[in-house]
Image 1 (tube, rainbow, N blue to C red):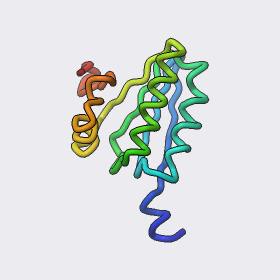
Image 2: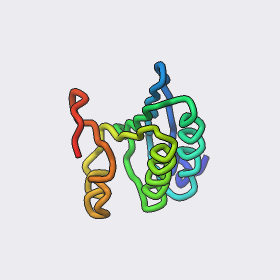
Image 3: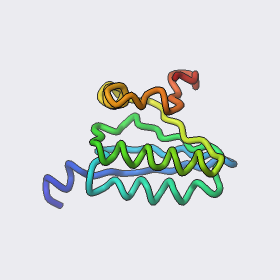
Image 4: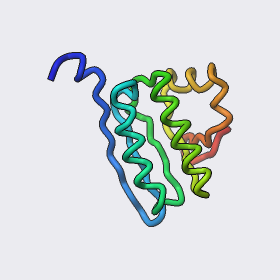
Length: 116
């Protein structure tokens, strides 16, 4: 695998419990790999009333990655499900703030406290 491919590597780990699913994202959510997140999460929507994207290990997100998260949010909401974000790093918080999308998402902080 080339250094560029490694740099853009995105890994997803899904943990399903009842009608909820936590998707742990690691690496970079950027053009070229964003479809992986969309495919994985869109398959969860029919069976999971609550989907949480854990962004603890997400090091970078570009506009394509952000568009994918917004698209998943719209898909989940239109199906009557929730898509929440947890453990946002500083760069991801800044991206959501600059784009005025921070208030759109339900963001879960420490101790499962909902923040808007």
